Amino acid sequence: MNLPLRENPWRLMLAVNLVVIVGVFFYKITREPYVPYIHLVVDYHFGFTKRALIGALVSLFATKVPVWLVFALSGVVWLITLGLFVQLFRRTFGFDHAHMPLFVFMAGSPFFLKNFMFTLGHFDIYGCALAIGLLLLPARSIGYVISAALGSMILILIHHIHLLMYVPTIAVIVLLRHYLVQGFSRQNTIVGIAAAACIALLFAAAQFYGTMQVPPDEFVRYLQGRMADPTRTNLLSFSFIWYQPLSQEIHDTWARMPSNILGIPVFALLIWLHAPLWRYFAGLISALALESHRRIVIAALAMVSAAYLIMFAIVFDYSRWVSNWAVCMFLILHAVKMLPSSQDVKPIPAEDRNTTVLGWIVTLIPRVGIIRPF
Image 1: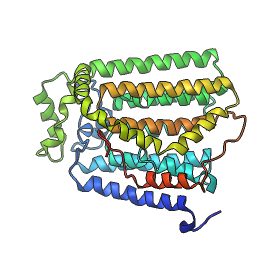
Image 2 (image 1 turned 180 degrees about the vertical axis):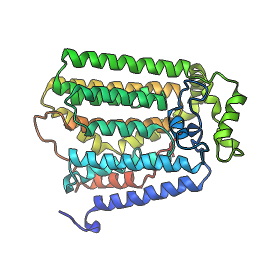
Image 3 (image 1 turned 135 degrees about the horizontal axis):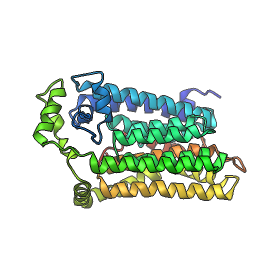
């Protein structure tokens, strides 16, 4: 039933979310925050290099890279991700009145599309888009496993931290959609093991052999040669990360830990605001037809969460990690919904006052941030 906006708060929340997203976009492009421009100018000029795939692709089409391309490219990826998620939700749940609260708690979450808008230019969204694509693709053939592996390797070439950020979620999606449905045949088991080995080897190569081998001054001069405006040297201030070993990243993270850990109560509060969604997710797991499926899903959630805990100990962009963890939970929820169920699970109650209040709070929070909350 299509009620007017004033009689349907959940539809009104979606409208408000659109306004908030537009506001975040203009806030992003009209200020001078850190712009992840450097990833568009680093390529494979000096040999195999970590975090260089996007820049290498850009170099095929542009010899000089303008700053606006950061927002144009990432904006297109954001729109693609939005379209994919809308299609996924329509296919999994539908856009009836009963499931509108669930859509608001996902699509309107400050963890998800709004935070991706605030972090335009960062690489996180590529993993999310690939995971959503795998939730939409048919999962019957061995080609599905191979496609997921190739996609994961592309993510690692974009940035090797995807091994912890989205590759575990992609593995869970493949497990739930392919292996639990098709079974573990000899062929798909061998392909799965080989795929995992290739992904691990590529990560090791990027992490330990992808550092820049030329002097920093030579590297910076080359990057300036690719810039449309070489005078903006402040955009190259993070060039040191192509020389930084893992040990230094861990040292820097733990040096910031005392101050960054103060944000944990805020993150916990933000997660709690999504309580209706988590209760619905727990209901889906409890309703699974097979006990083995329930145990596998719980173990998968623990594995994905453990990967994020490792990231917390290595890189200090805590707001991004918490946000992407929540997005991974949203996507795994869709995969769980696709498994055989023994009973229907009641949707999030649309008329419940407390749920509506939480929905409004989630709607009005514009984003979570990059390092510290807000």
